[in-house]
Length: 570
Image 1 (cartoon, rainbow, N blue to C red):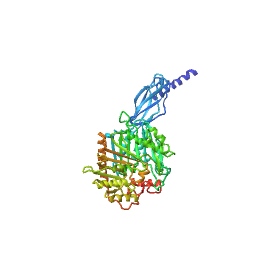
Image 2: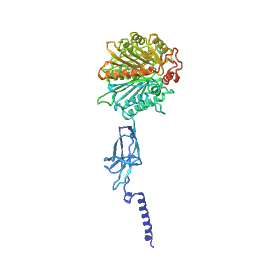
Image 3: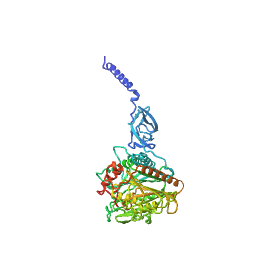
């Protein structure tokens, strides 16, 4: 047998083995000879909000104008979701509308000369940021109560409001503090997560202003501050933004940045620019939402009121820099804030602008006044001009505390009581001598005063006759407690809603809000008892003062050794 003839059986055997291997692998001889193709993906966004579109791009080394398919994994199989052709430079792109989190891949089916190929699989995450409809008639009030009643509803509606912001709009938040828990879900987490998702995926610019002494390194709120900084511009003020010295020359205690408001420059509820203002009596934390009596007002499409809050925010930012309000004279001009209404003066270590109750949009019935104020008290000024009739004589007050350092407020309430108005007051059980003195003063004036725990409200609601002789159902709410510092040293806001100043549906909305506040006040009143004549020393005991009040007291201790830093003694 010749070498050639003896090698032929071996070659035939090898060809047979190769053919069998191709059959077993599912690949024909012709397929094995095809050119290999790669499908690669560009790096890019792999997450977004439900309903948003995410673009998936990449390159396939198959010939130009080849068809490639985007496949979605359903169970254990892959299903084609969309197909497209590659460009002249072999690139492809798919726009995916996110509905749920799913795995995807891009597949090239192959051709006569090119082998089939698939990309690596990847996950597109669809994150939730649920929007909501606009507040009916432009005004909405949210309540939360001790025991968690209303907490999730209030937080969810605030989060949904944030998620309804227009793409590319701006959200500004001034808050005493925000508490975020990295390891557990809370109502405040829901709000913060919504802010983060709108910032990352909708291009919303978020700015946050906090009291700086609460977020210093080593303090319990530091982690929350660092979390906010991952997606927002965060600015802090120590001792409040308007103060230039820690303690006043007249012996007053330190001021704080105590605001609780949010503005959104544009919502998605209308075809044109439609802003929103949120004004709250509480900060965003689990304890505040679940253990306190608090309320939040949403005022929608009130551009003049929104502008006043926005100017105030810019003023706070200006005062937060090293010049401590020195740059405001230049900065205010960019907002059209005239010298007559917005020029600040320095007195007693505090910068303040002219005292004014700034009206909102005509017919909306809204107005706002800001602190600190050097001499005036706009809330007292309005109350002093009210009177009552037989059918309009209801005055309801719910405050964290009232101290004798607001004598005009106390005198106005006493005068209304003497005129035959039905004046009733609910406050926290006193935990300081100033609060005890405030309760004693009100009782001495003949007011009906009861105490409970967890009151973090700042409410006065009146149904009476205003100084112009108009029947008026007015609500005062916001950040300002009825103490000296709240008026003279702290950064605060008081929002007023008045039926007498409103027309049409806005008047209806405010009347409905007033009724809702009275029902809420009645629920609060039902939990009260006689007020203590000796202040409790258990400022940090949640079982005595309530978890929300205990949290505030603990934070106050981190500000200063003076226990009245947040609950001022004046």
